[in-house]
Image 1: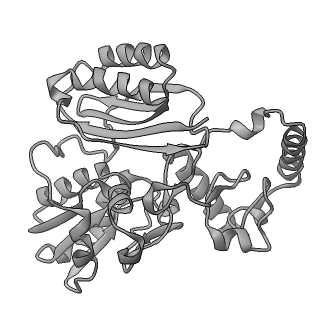
Image 2 (image 1 turned 90 degrees about the horizontal axis):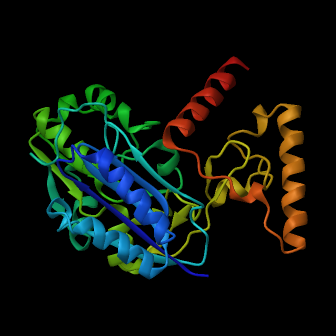
Length: 325
């Protein structure tokens, strides 16, 4: 059965976010809407999935509040099951920079429409930065973009301090998955005294939706935080997969590696798996294959994608272990 996926966010003054948590959880359960909704006093950030009717009910409910009346949203269709439950969580920030003084409602960089983004990418005088995390950049990014090699958005300020401080007078252009991270990152740079800051309006997803493949400067696939793993031009499902051993997103080259074993390990973790962990993964993979052969679901297939923080901890743990070997 096809699912409609909706992604949206809005920075807004939301001191009543706890009340919104209760209302949204009730509304989503009533209309069988699954996914993740993050609330904070600075607004809302969400990816949800359901029938068209279910999605419309939830978005209509949100937009009845004047703070969200003009909130943009994007929908796509997939044959895959993208989420298995609804999570409505309240946090300090809807995208965690770690600096509550940065407020995109006060000032952000200059928005660049997808149709005009190529001129930014091709401009030799622009420092083009992918503000996403390292595991996201790995499976796709724009031609010539700088990878800050961050494991979490909370490391953005450190990256700026170490790498951009001497370039305050240069043009800085940024992009991220849906636009939310760049709104904060651009606001942060302007606060730090940077003069010309640009960001891709609607993020990579907006670019992949509106710019045709033959004119595109995007290379690879775009990581998304649901069971599709990635999308490509036209927002069609991509081919990337998640490693069951370390939960890392894998591109085509990863899956061609001799260290890749479907359902068990990949180049990022193959050398670090202990015998007990390997045995457990092999048995789990065997059970999944048996369930598929009998056309039955298996709980092991429905392991949710790892959160950014957990992925960062996992990556750091592997890095430290590798250095000790």
